[in-house]
Image (cartoon, rainbow, N blue to C red; front, side, top):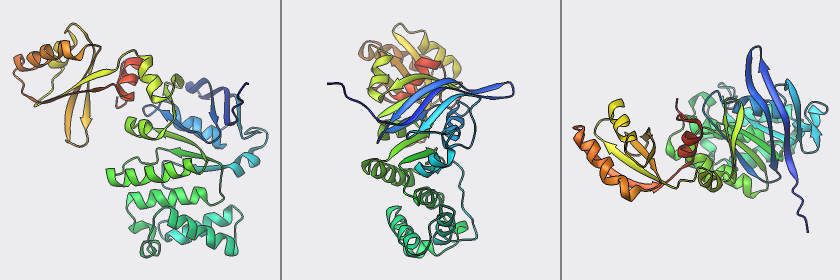
Length: 323
């Protein structure tokens, strides 16, 4: 028996040009109903441009987009009824408090009276904003609090499809994980979510499928585990030396069995690390360590781990997400 998958988003051969720049290049993808789908890539990859076209904020140069069963080009108001959009930039009025901001946006959605009041109370509870905080002006809020009110504003009209553009950008780990819990709860409620991010741990933690974007194209698509298998490598050596130089990186790259080497920032240790991608970590580990030591550099720590989505991105593009 053939299983029919219902799609909440269908993007077919979409291109977006800005004069001589191609921001999205003949891109096609589908997002299933109830799926938490990640758009992963560096700044400038085309992620935000794509989500703006899905939301109707930008018109594609060519191609078609459907949300639900409606064409964004032909029935934009029907699409907007289904969509909740959380932009990367905070879209709140600083001189109003959380309730006043949500009341304003609720009226734009056509809500009023007791229904609007109850919906605001429900969302303030859902986004974990306490009663004292909601009475203060938004200008006094932390970045995490502003993000939560931003999400609440997008949920007022109970949309089925939610577009989240870099929702945790600039947040500390505690606030980031609090927002992750909110996103996971929305997924459990059956919402269809498109999450754009350049944070690999976020995509791996939250998304059932990920599209890796680069230069306006999707260069890889699948679950995080499928993408790791695609590069046919599963191991990485993480080394923390006391200093990193371009000479050291080139020396390690020249070791037989090393597929790639790149630097990464360890948020927990607040240090720069070397990531060495290889098929045979046990065999080449002694050579990696001796090369570092012979370069008059101390090895502070060494760890063997699985390849991550960031490693996959580097394998596919030859560069880091941070470049």
